[in-house]
Image (cartoon, rainbow, N blue to C red; front, top):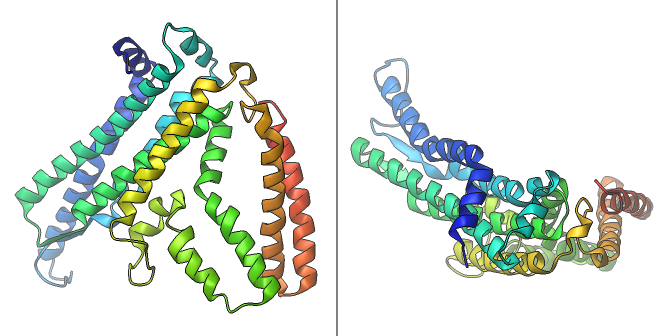
Length: 330
């Protein structure tokens, strides 16, 4: 399934980038932890500096690496597919004596393996520092690392699947972002408009948002779940922040594998590799533009005129945007 020769080729193709990202990512949290402890010691020895007590605390849920580790998955996936297409190297890769499924599996194994290794090493080094420094409390140490790892792998799988459907790096990034907020566009926007038309009390919209739309939106697991109060945002079940992104990662992986095995290579540079996707996606973009700008128009002056004008503007913007994005070869 994963060939050693192909794995070596994929590694050497972006070796320096992989090494630099790994070095920065592995040591960011340990260094941040050390800097936090150094600042604490300085404050303790400074009579003008006040602390709650004389104990050191560290909150891992706000750590910069843990909060932004998902960008690593995004970066790796774009390098492995989108950037490779832009450089014209994908045709060479596909001409090698390996099946397309083997090529995709190898790319995924390399990217996911590096992501996992980075998180494991960062966790190990930070844990050793915790044993040595022995802070009073380390908030969300285990859970933050686990959420970061699962979220990063999910975003990596999503972006790799987007790369298997698109013909350039910018298209891959746009599709990745659009998919990450798709439940908001596909479900929440129409619900908001139904609420406006029938003038309900919005309770069903808010309940659906908290219980259904947020849990199935990929973007939730790189933003809200790190900072939200569980009592304010009811969820489906315990462990939702781990289980749902794992399921989505598997789904995105299967979509990417199928698309990579079946896609036509002669449309490199186009927004979508499948020509049959152009028109349906254009229609969706126009619909989302109409609904989105209609919402903005109504919110601005709460009048039916603003609602209609907003929808007209949204339709024009959606049509122009979709045309220049989808039908213009890069």
